[in-house]
Length: 200
Image (cartoon, rainbow, N blue to C red; front, side, top):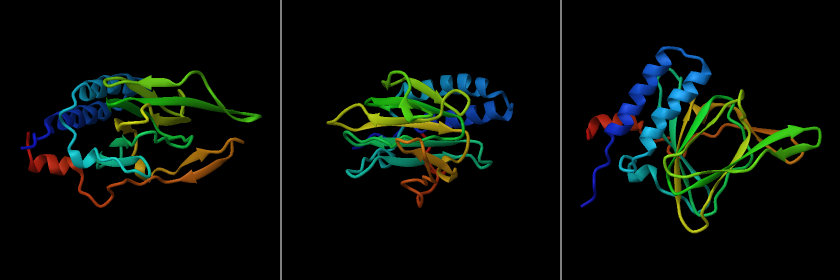
């Protein structure tokens, strides 16, 4: 018999983040206090339903967990199959990445006259760790599963409906190629609605 996910953790996070954004704080406050809330969420690995934790052998999966009705934020589970990674890309809004299961590497990049270059050392995120991005503090990076033999899962929170944001991947010469990511589960109902039907 399978254990029911504790969706009350996600409901609480959504409510607390929405309350924070209702106050219209500066981005520094959003990132600082939002990181605290996300750290509390990802410090427990008992709430993400299996349907939103499934890897794909071909590419990483981006499952929408919640999209704010006013487009102020979205919550996504990124599921990394063994060895999978993103291209170098940006977000163009603030974002928080919380590690739930496994580990991932985040390598920052900058663009100068010679093109794309790595900036600093890659950051390794372990379960419970949270990392921030935004155009203000650094927004171009590449993310990869730290493991070649198992799945890793991270929870991403963005300051928009990220699946609908026009952003870019970057080539080695620094040139941009725009894209809109969408979601791996675009036809599924919002998890907020599912959680109301299955209170935990």
